[in-house]
Amino acid sequence: MSAPSGLEARSSQSSPLREDWLAHALSTAPADRPAAEDAVARLYAAIGRPPPEFAWVRSPAEATTVLPAAGPFRFPGDWQTTEAKIAALLSGLRRPLWRRGEWKGEWRATGEELRRIVRESLVPAVNSTMPWSPGIGWSGQHDADWLAEFDARRQLKGPLLDAWATIGRSTGWWWPREGLCVMSDRPTGVHTDANSLLHNKNGPAITFADGTGAYAWHGRTVPRWVVEEPDVVRILTEPDADLRMAAADSLGWERYIAEADPPLAARAPDPGNPGFDLELYDLWPRTRILLVVNGSVERDGTRRRYGLQVGPWVRDPVQAAAETYGLRKDQYLQLLRRT
Image (cartoon, rainbow, N blue to C red; front, side):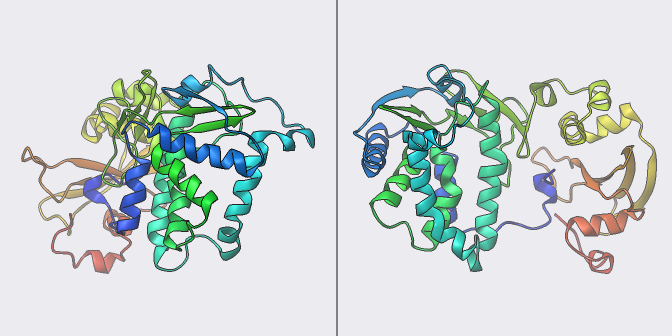
């Protein structure tokens, strides 16, 4: 699980290019339907198909009411379908990227961060809103990660890549079919944490105009109860360890520690935050957490307590704190005050 914003070990790199494509990925603006439809028509023309009819829906979930559930892929016949031909077209366009290897040079850290935001946070959340898979389709604004990589290499050139980039800048998810293309509007609400990962402690992290949406905790898609109804009993009986961590964080670590009373493994003064302690707790089998007090004061004048998962073999709270910053213990001991 990502560290809460007050305890981020390393700040992410940024660039105008990253900010531009991230803004498209997180956009809640109404879709630019004329631009999106024109771009899709160009892709249809590239595979020898006439422009399709367009069916606009309010969300990817609503698209499943228009498209049938995806059946088994039949080889070789299905390779001649519109969606398969567009998939092959895209594969050819992206082949230079695969040959050269992804996320190289100065773009590596920024590109990997953007891919994490899109592929590990946004796409799983949107997928979770759909009752079944409607088959081959593309993510529109959530293709921002690979589009940004092409942009970084100045490879967004030519009419077809330009069409794909236009779709990424104009609309949400879309599904091309014979004579019909189903297009989804963008979400109407998106909430993120300091790392731009989906997160909302008060409700759904992403919502659409038809009322569908998904809950997320620091980038991970979670069930509604994790955000709105966390409680110790449910946390302790949840089989997924990551969901247990998210729910305990949602409940609040002070309250969770007080109610669950896990064994305290070790305690030590925090050299990076004088006057406060570092505490190691054994939450459940093979799961140990470091409970720390935020080095920065919140807007209301209080200091939040955060729980950070550490290796079950860690015995020294100071060493554990150092590792969350990517430091050695001796380096952490020299900190005047962490943030």
